[in-house]
Image 1 (cartoon, one colour):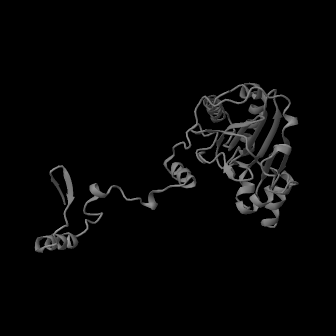
Image 2: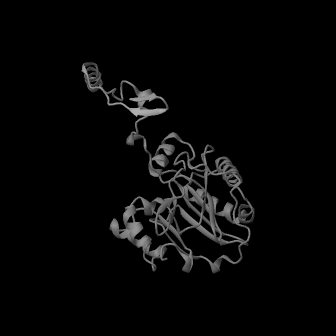
Length: 296
């Protein structure tokens, strides 16, 4: 307590009387307001169950059938590349489990990009081999226009047109499709079905075709191609379900981190794991050379 008297400030001693003691007791006995009864007073409590990591978000987006992460349609393939053989090493492997096998793949070097296409005709359906062959013929005839398709929207529209062509053709079944355009610094593509495309870097692995629709397949007239676009930060593996259905991803990851691994080694892993070839298998592996993020 302060007392002002004749221009002087005098500090008075607090009187600890009966009234003061009663006030202190009252303050101590006052209950603390819990969070649940007064949320506005305490604010929002952090709930770790609501903290979602990227893998959970991707899984949930796939369940909902939405695109995540959202890719801008303005994502373009790098136009300043030269001979792609200087930057990437490509190995491929194709083996049919029987004479009417329906896997097909094609690798083309364009003017500014490396173009990859893989198709797996739907087993148990007539015209599966014709379907994958149709996809390869379409790819060879349209590789120039595909290379000049600078947005995901244009690639998706091209595949939608292919779907309608196959649907209207006689004796042509259904097929999966993975199409990719790779430059010195970027990969862009589109996929339908259960064939997949992955990127393997030193610090991470990512399925580029994660958001694809497994069904309906290409040739059904109702296919839903989904595009993908990403900076090229590691090696690219494209394969049919003959690899991914029979080899655990952990083994694939382990083998991918060996510098000498090629497409043949990956296919051999699939055959060894099941004691022989049970399904058609097609594999394309693109190593990005000395600058690969896997070896740095």
